[in-house]
Image 1 (tube, rainbow, N blue to C red):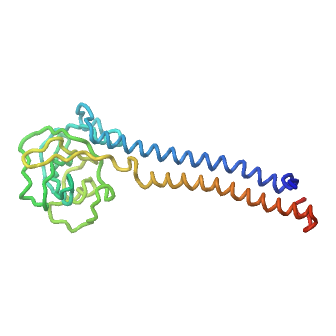
Image 2: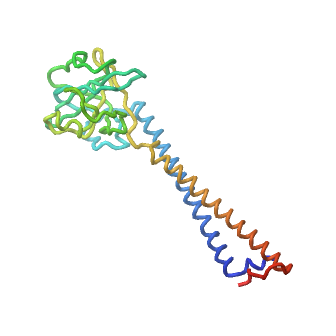
Image 3: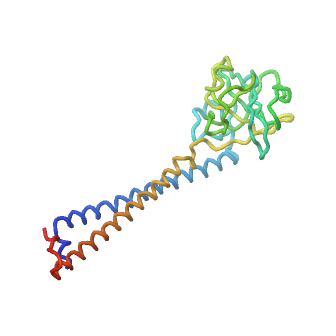
Length: 256
């Protein structure tokens, strides 16, 4: 009854299934590992952003900003320049705005510095002016924001003196100096300003890519299951045909 398994057709089917199933299981396991790695990266980034990152280091030694340096404590020296407001920012579930001040360093480049957060609608009269003279600031280093990372949907139309994103691209037409492709949030607020905690770097874990890896994991395992299902379906069909042929009900079509 099972002589059909020795036909060239079934040799080909069995060889294909024997090779395809391990490949599917390997690819599914690899995608699952990628998802777990991204989850771990996300946890590490959050822990780094919310814990003490050690002694402060000069800004230049931490550039360019990446997953390892994002959230590190940086120091920079210069003089305060133009002050801007970043509206629609939440802190402790309260709506408010950031006070963003440019720090013109000795090298002639300006570093965006979030001096703190204030509740309510963005208003330049509420924001305290920065001190005069040379200062040294210390705070958490952050990568330039993108529209997806800060949740701001306003593309334009902000009042003069306000900016939607903290990035060199959004500030280039508002600040005459060359800008660092990074920003710093001070670890201590002054006066009414509340310090803004550092955030995890963008694309550090639970992004769409991470969930794509999880989706691909399921797809590969489904493919493996589908191959097993189709093999048994073909096996059952040819077994029934072989049995009918033995009984003389149909010609033996499995012999080839």
